[in-house]
Amino acid sequence: MWDERYSVEEYAYGKMPNKFLEENYRVIPKGKVLSLAEGEGRNAVFLAKQGYSVTAVDGSQVGLQKAKKLADEHGVSIELIHADLADFDIGECRWEGIVSIFCPLPSALRKALHKKVVAGLKPHGIYFVEAYTPDQLKYDTGGGKSADSMTTKESLSLE
Image (cartoon, rainbow, N blue to C red; front, side, top):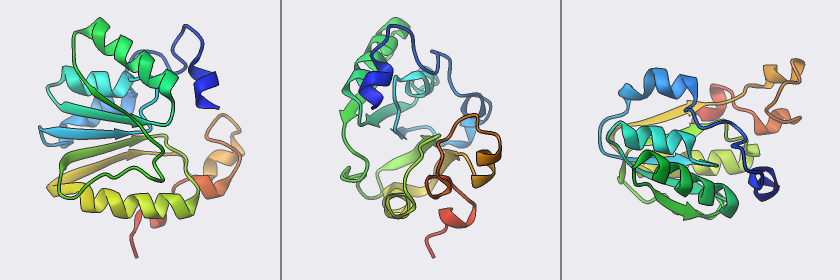
């Protein structure tokens, strides 16, 4: 699905970073940052331009190829990993920041991933999230059609 979406010349979400990330990235300590479901690279490239060491993971090889192209255009380097988030090993105590911008996942997968995220963060690391809540369904403007793939404050808890 995502390979098809990203297979056109233009960038599906543009080349500029997500506004929430652009306005708030400074809360992420300098160092190594992992960007989940990075897509075509706009957020990873932005963070690399701010001096972070960025690893971008995505299930779309086409998206990652475009991310590489965008990084080259901006003269920055990002590590690109083609992987399914269900199987991806985040590691332990490895990242100053983990970024997730609009990454809709089924609740069971999201809960398992959040446990990996917590384990993967260094002390004082930041999990930076922007996600649709189930309220988004009333607007029908993006985020999918299933409340199960949307995030609530409670669903971020590991309890």
